[in-house]
Length: 298
Image 1 (cartoon, helix red, strand yellow):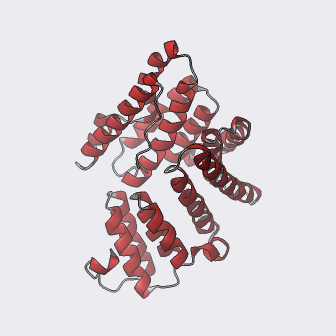
Image 2 (image 1 turned 60 degrees about the horizontal axis):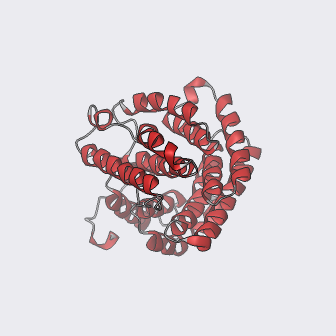
């Protein structure tokens, strides 16, 4: 992919990162990957560019290639040697994310085993970041909680979700943005507190209305976990109660097309419709007890 991309002029590390981030926010994930790889030609030891390249590749659904690139770029070491705590956490959670993505392509006990391993990896990062006082520790924490629930370990999931809610509640109001809002919603879904989760939706939708509030990949990555968690909760209900919860799935997990397109670029129109279609398919499967689709949305 990088070999076919047009060469950009010489840039500083910060300029390469800014260009890759811009492409990523606009949903041009392959282009963002190419930009990061080109930047590595000039800055071959940059863990930030390495992380961005692998993350964007993984977000396209190319899990196997992303794992190979993670190894080739020797990112494992960057989890302990990156120049900032934030970047060290990003690299460590990226490795866990790749295990999670691989798990979602499996089925049965193999799937559950890999989900548990991904949850364990996120949990280790969560414990380290919490001990270090990192205010962003909730991010690996909520991922660990969600994956434990999907793996069938409700006790571990509930314990972690409770701690995450406590951490988020302690954040000052100026630190409570979109990610904090949807992480709180996800924790409530893990705990089965669906009505409280729905109350967080309006706040999240309001944040989406701001121009350039959030990028394509980030939006997608917050929707799929919530859809999976909610569908698991609904499937545990008697069949007679499922139908009333299916519409709630869409309300909780998907921003309306109007919210996305009213102040966002035209590219979000198709994305919003795709998310709506994805959740409708989940709803149909819930009513018929079939498995939930696992498309690449993040």
